[in-house]
Image (cartoon, rainbow, N blue to C red; front, top):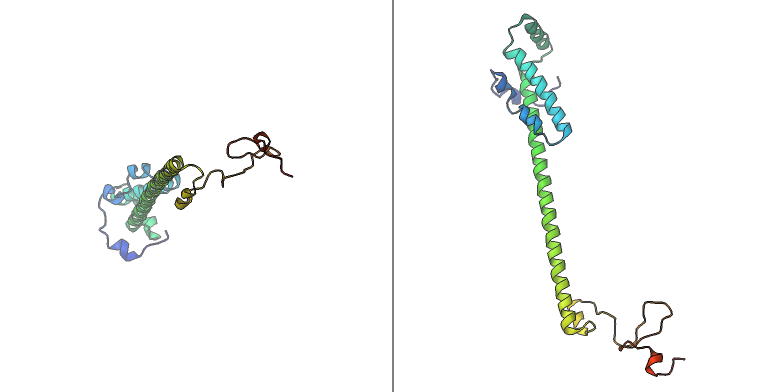
Length: 183
C-alpha cells in the first residue's frame, strides 16, 4: 500500500485493540451521510478494507486467516494501514464537511445579496415614483436625484410610430392646433 502520510504520524497514534476502536470515525453512518456519490464510494471502500483487515488482525483465530495475516505482513500490510486508511477517511470527511459548510454559507450570502439588491431597487424605484408624482414627470428638479425626466424636454416631441404627426404638450397635432404647417 502506498504510504501518503509520514510513518511517525501513524505510529504515534495508539494501536487499536478492538475492531470498533480500529474503525474509529469510519462508521457506516459516516459512509451513509457522505454528501456525494464519489465520497460515499471511497469511504465505503476504505471501511470495507478497514473492517476486513481489523477483523483479521484483532479477532480471528482461524489458521487460514492467520496465514492471510502472515502473507499481508510479508508485504508490510497491517494495523498501520488500518490506521492510515481511517486517518485519510477522516481527512476526507472533514474536507467534505468544510466544503458543504462553505457552499451553504455561499448560498446564504447569495440569498442575502439578492434580498438587499431587491430592497434597494424597491426603495429607489419608490422614491423615483414619488418624486415624479410630486414634482411632475418632466420636472428638471428630478435630475438633481439622478432620476430621468420622462418625455425629455418640454415642447415638441415625436410619437413612437414612424410618420405620425408631431404632438405638442397638449396632445394635439400641429394640424389640429390651427398652426400653419412647417415648410
